[in-house]
Image (cartoon, rainbow, N blue to C red; front, side):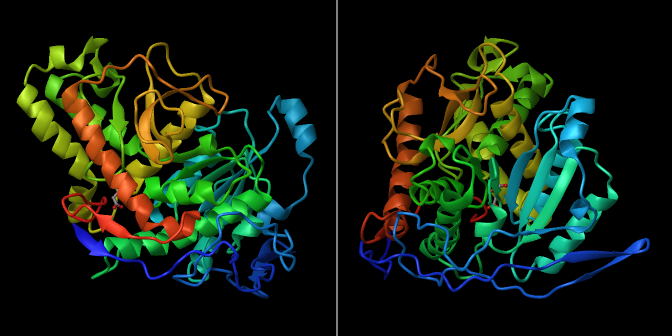
Length: 436
Ligand code: LMR
């Protein structure tokens, strides 16, 4: 066991002390003939100081924050959306907030969202893009490219660096931005640094987002970040928070298809259990190929138990070695898949994997963590856990290992979830994605 103690301690009387935040008036497009001249007035980030202990209960919107996030360029043009909706039989506009919006994953994702392939060809959207002080110029570049793409369904784009402004009324929050693990940084340090970000964003969502916002956490370690986020957003149902394990599901489907010599659309009922880490459990017991149990199609049990399992667990790390950076395009595709799985009915008999809150789960997994499990949706944005799954001893033992890792991560961030002093005893033989 690697033992390290987080120095901070939680005291219920302490509340979030964010730096005073001033509304961001970042980009104002002034139309001058055919061109426009962007200029900035003021940017102030309101990040929480590292190691600062945070109370779990979200404060109201800080009084010095107003909600005027800035529209960008052509998207500031006034238009009558209701008239458009009527003539084109569009649904009403939905607001989608994306953090880490100037990063590689977002760069793939935003254009998918804007094109209509995720939410549907009759769903107009507003994109509310959260960047950092450092990435703001790049974020303007992203907004410019969105302008130049002339997507009919993309009605509004706003950019900014303050989550209390950017998350305003959003119905979806795609939380991609997180710090990568730097050289020499311990896992406990990464959990703490990213945990601070997700605690702050949970508070901001709680204060200003739609009461039924659906949150997909992508930034690693995503399961524990999602737990921190939901604990800091007590007014939003915990069930609405997801940690992205869809990429692992897609990877597992591809490897089973390869081994079975079929195309990957023939693989269904693919569950990823547990943490998005090297303890994750790609479940070949319940998976099907052409509707037949995968174990009956792939008779090589040794391959399934060792090579297949490890290949999925370590795919993210291997990809980092090849690319020199984390997966981006396939992550974006899997975010799109994860959303689509919630906004369209799950095909009869099938399910999809998502890291969700464990309270009330029927599998005997510890409560109060975010754990990847098989889900089904009616297409209304909500989901139910699948109950028609088999769990044998082999599967249970592996699930337990991932559960133990997540419980250890949870103890390590107790100062961010309001559960007292943090204490890190992370198992040494498990790793976060990208750590290998
Ligand atoms: C992946 O699975 O590709 C990523 O989560 C890896 C990482 O650490 O960014």
